[in-house]
Image (tube, rainbow, N blue to C red; front, side, top):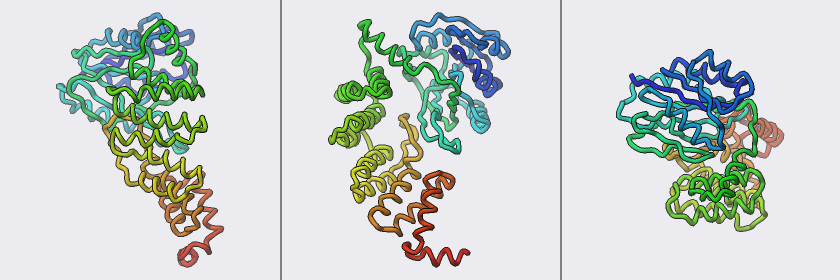
Length: 369
């Protein structure tokens, strides 16, 4: 069985650090925690789990801090987590099974990362991250912010997920501030950094600047396909916020980079639904239902776009088109995905009030009663 060093960088993580370490302490062989300037009880809590606690002066460079933590590892593989990450009981079991059978020739293990959830705590936004890396391959982080480890060697994908459970909101301007400090210093952002700089600008409502970044990014020829597809969606969002009628053109551009994604089809559907072009919107939502997730593509993934959301919106489209039978059928399909969802519950009451307009529904309800 392989041995694992868990390497973390932390600062003022008192509310969450114990929860994280409790979820993983028995799955790893070594815990290394690098503190970048805590002023709370973080280090005292961590001392209950490991004596390998180190200080590192923060320099607005996540890669530098993570590389320092990696340099202290002594085991075969290095695993990284943030303090507000956990492994659920299900994923702890999955991790243990996969760890015990891992082929030592593997250099990189990609694991799912769940970062957003619905009202029932089900993931609605996920993507894969490099999570376990062979130490003798000398894995190195790059990027002062939105850092990444360039992959090399044999890579495998696990269904095991790390779940991101944020309790305290960090400085929302930190990442943008780091990017703009780099730009002022004359540092030229690489393509990946340009992409994430654009996303930070978009998140701060600076849509015109963000759109310019995404347009320049998409003109480049050697960026990652998944980032290009996401940049198309982000460019659409910026243009839409700017009130531009050419906004959907960015989404159609994504088809140059791969098979249509359900997320993109839902975006197009939402545009036409907003424009009250219900037949066209329905076509795109039905297209979303035909899409198949490329599970190991590594890009951002919204599970609701592959079932629940298109069904919910198709219910709206066909209701507006006056096809109550079809609208009701899609309502029932959306109900299978998320029966307790507020919109589904609202629609259930709506259709109860209109039961006489739905062919066969009144007889069906009477038979059930």
